[in-house]
Amino acid sequence: MTASAKAAPALSFARGVVSIAVLLLLWEVGARSKHWMTGELFAPLRAILQALGFKPHHLPLVGAAPPPSGVLRSWAAIVTDSGYWQSWAKSFLRVAAGFTAAMLVGIPFGLLLAVNRTAFGVAFPLFEVLRPIPPLAWVPASIIFWPTQELSISFVTFLGAFYTIVINVVGGAKAIDVRYFQAARAMGSSRWDVFRRIILPGTLPSIVVGAVVGMGITWEVVVAAEMISGGGSQIGGTGGGGLGFFIWNSYVGGSYEQIVVGMISIGIAGFISSELLRLLGRRVTPWLTPR
Amino acid sequence: MVDTALTGRAPAAAPVATAGKIVASGVSRSYGAGPDRKDVVRDCSFTVERGKMSVIIGPSGCGKSTLVRLLAGFERPTAGTLALDEAPITGPSRDRQVVFQESALFPWMTTYDNVVYGPRARGDRREATRALAEGLLEKVGLKDFRDKYPPQLSGGMQRRAELARALINDPKVMILDEPFRGLDALTKELMWDYCARLFEESRRTTLFITTDIDEAVFLADRILIMTNIPTRVRAVLEVELPRPRRLADVAASDHANDVKAEALSLLHEEAMKSFAHGSRAAADFVEAYARRSPR
Image 1 (cartoon, each protein chain N blue to C red):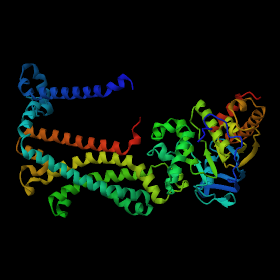
Image 2 (cartoon, rainbow over the protein chains, first blue to last red; image 1 turned 90 degrees about the horizontal axis):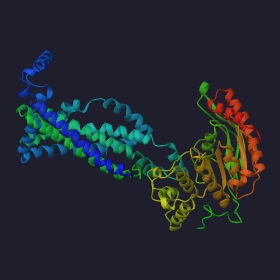
Image 3 (cartoon, rainbow over the protein chains, first blue to last red; image 1 turned 120 degrees about the horizontal axis):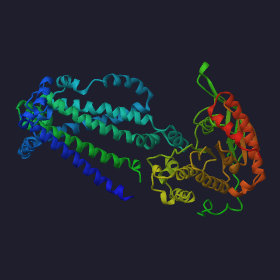
């Protein structure tokens, strides 16, 4: 390995730090534009903003947002609040429940569709009709169908990951080189042996991809479902609604700093879950790591 | 195990295979139906003799790989019969192992796990089989790479691992379908050497498919020259060169050059025919042949 290749991770980390720092700086300056936009110097800019329909006394978008320093203060204030961490735990549990169910149902279902022509013929058209329905469109129906709110949110979360996982499993299994099957059969493999030692490991990389993508969708869906369903009322307490409800509640309560705290929390939560999955994925597919 | 494949010459008293005679009679294979029907193999008859290295050579796209799938039993002929030692070929079997074009090693298994795939699939977990696998890995020079995954091996290593994976099943016939395609010239020559050594040691009936005339002449006892698509055997040339063979000896041999010239002129005729039918691959061959100064 060359020196430059060794330095690469440190360098790319430094680049990441720089980009985040620059973003925070621009955001801070922009958010404080309320104070300096009043100057005579900015009169033409104010005129342009007014013409476009923006409020003329601060920069659009960032000017309306709370500054990072304020967000940080607000975060520091609630970091010790158990309700905030309950929101984390609640969303994580819902994601975990929906995602695990999607894996447990989606992988066998996808494999069945891939290896059995009859199953594919029967189930795939139905699957393809249901798939374009966005998981969020299921929210009202699932609130009606499922006995508890918890189950209905988890069900919608499940749908978010399920379709992606199934599509990836079917695609991955069907893309396995036909010569692997031919070689295996010529060497005396039984059907079960082919399934266990060719189809399953051959589909594994696609399962990992489907899981990582599905996890991302799961977070999108859980947050939206929590916002729509309100979350807190049935479960009780401000922390019962999850991070989605946390954001919604902050909006209703007019705490703009907390909205941003909630958004960043979801970003971090999604990042942690995806990285964990990638780590796990690399472990189960060691042959894809070049050495 | 004596490492004859790597360095030494074949044992003086080479064993002679007692099995592996393939007879193809009137074999045809077509795809599609009605006006879209395409004949790939038509009325093809030939014999692969036991204990010999037979090389099938023909223009690219002539239907050689289809013939391989028929011989391996992955597909059935639309007409005619194929038999191995008088038993009709009806499906894949341990008796006929195929080494495919490019690598068909299982990427998710280490070199060793690939090699022992066949025995494990048949429930054979004996210590002797394990030792045999280790011996084969050593023989093809992959002892130090037994725990690597195929993507971590070079092209030449992948080919050798695949040879070992097929050989451990002790097939009556080895079918090698353009196994060294895509390797660079030097690696190719190294692989020819491996291939010749392995054959000379066991005299296992081998059918080798290629488009490379030098490869054919170096390896073959018999060369079957195929016609353009729909393919059948155009001519059979005997290569009467002593074994074990050395690249330098074969390059200097007048007989080898005569066989080469004859094979080339037959292939040229076939290429001209496919050229007339609009094949671009054939155009390259026709041009190359025209530039090659006749001996």
